[in-house]
Image 1 (spheres, rainbow, N blue to C red):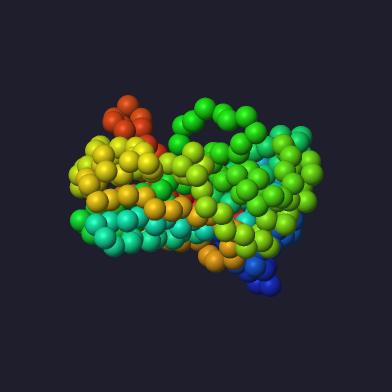
Image 2: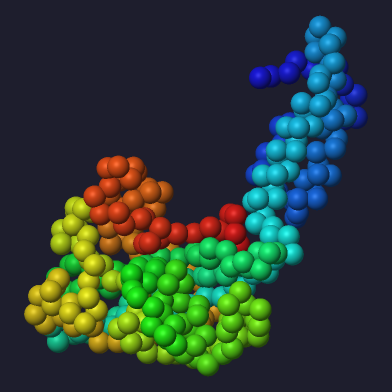
Length: 288
């Protein structure tokens, strides 16, 4: 609803609506937004009928803006967060040739002020190996479903614990001892993954039909691609390189990262139940 404004002091700039996008135009923190909003109360005059504006309602609206600003900055109170990039390289033997693909993903592990571990944030894409046949092998951002193995770290939502264990850095649940994860971004150790440690592999029987997605056994690419195609090696390492973007869209011209599922926007209509964020996701605006 527009509020008609009476005459205002010439020394006061015209009123504008505050939007959270202001955070990208000079505001560095939620406190800056609070400072920015104060003049708005002074700039609001009276309606044509001379009735005062309900400042209580106006202040309540401003509080919602401030809440959005806090959420946008991803503030976690006294919690902690740890950010690093990893590089995954997949090599495939394809009828006498070696097809190699690398991708980089940024990971942010978060511990709330209560000490509980929150869902990690990621920015990057699946690894896409282009084969001679024109088809593609995808290594998703997540690990495959698996049963726990005592004493062995596996790829889950992220490979953080796996990397720490394989490199030999200290690790502890909730990062109570965070020496290892603090050091991780500076390490350049490259580890060769065992099949059980690898991310989830998938491929499409028909790449123009998203409902034909199938999980691929890394020990048996022949079942999906036929004889002559074999996984050679998968390596994982921390890196300073920037996250990979655009490879999934180039391989699958129908792919839309904004869709909930690979083959549908609605769970009731999705056939495969594979989420788009398993292929591509980035939370730059809210989380980094």
